[in-house]
Amino acid sequence: MQPLIYCWLLLVGLGHVVLGIVLALVTHLPVTRPYFDYLYASVSASPPPIEFQGLLRNMVGLFGPTVASWGLLFSLLVFLYRQHGHRQIKPAIFAALLVWCLLDSALSIHFGLMLHAYLNAAAALSIALPLLALRPLTACR
Image 1 (cartoon, rainbow, N blue to C red):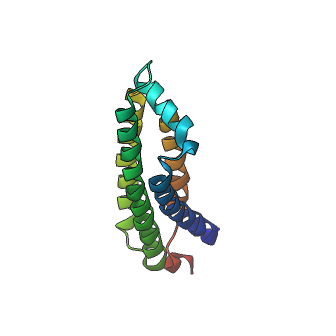
Image 2: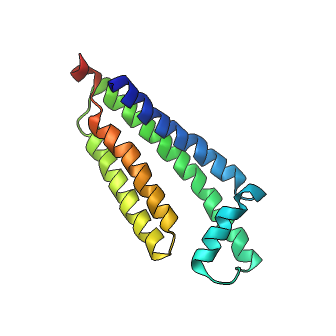
Image 3: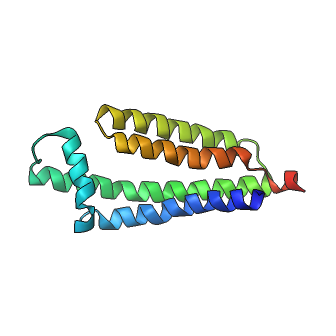
């Protein structure tokens, strides 16, 4: 079971890398229109000015590299924990998850983006539960 948990966590991290890069590249493509319409509707009943729409798309696009770099760092920490069992790694990942999930969800709820809060909860659980069960290789032998 441990190899499966380890692979899942690496997949989550590397998935963030891929999705972050994709996010940086596709924010101005028509395929993202429904998502941005959802964002605009959450802050106003009327469509925002075209300048604001471009600014928001740019800001979301700039967020992509942050997501990608987080995924890379997460994957490295999972690898190091699995290989060497450093005690500080799991609490640090849990602290990072809490900071991100609580703040991002609170802001999402405040601005009426309930979908984001639900996605945050699902993402946090998909990381936290397997991470809780993950053991270093030294403990598996």
